[in-house]
Image (cartoon, rainbow, N blue to C red; front, top):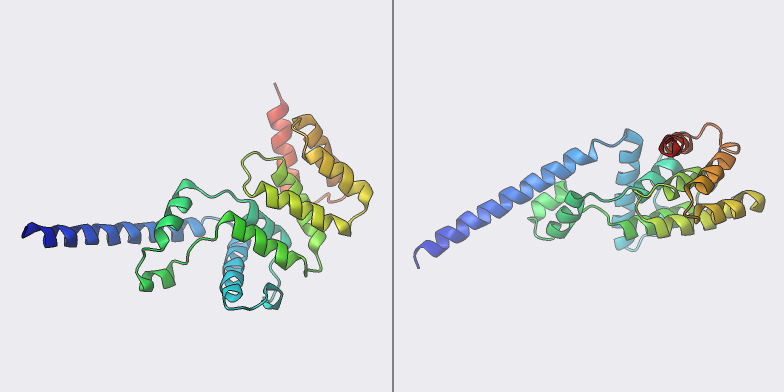
Length: 207
């Protein structure tokens, strides 16, 4: 019986140490992504906090504005197994640690925030090539939100571009998807996400 308090203390220390390690790993993973995407991640976290206080996402400002492609990349980036585990354990972190290791936003929240922000953004169409690249990549996350956003943002470009693209992006045939990306590249010839995904698909298609 006398050992129980000691065992609990040791167990508590072990849990805190594990959570500290989890926080450190989350912090290090955050800084592995490109600087532009880190800015987008931080901005979405700020939007989430402000939204919880009753502030509209459209009122959250940043100068210079966060690039639309970076916001979309953050939205479609799949969560790692570690991120999912860390998110589940975050609620048990001490309050002082929570201040230094904010809870990672889940896919649904990222999708909602990006969509709400872009609806008031003057460069909404910049999301289309990044979304197209993501929708042809089976490793992308938030696919339902990405497809819905593609449909919404498509109002800013001619129907002759958007409608065939929407149909082709939902086709499971990789050759059809590649044709869609190549047609979109004529509209956005210098978009890096689009060009990168086209190169990947051409490489994947080689025997």
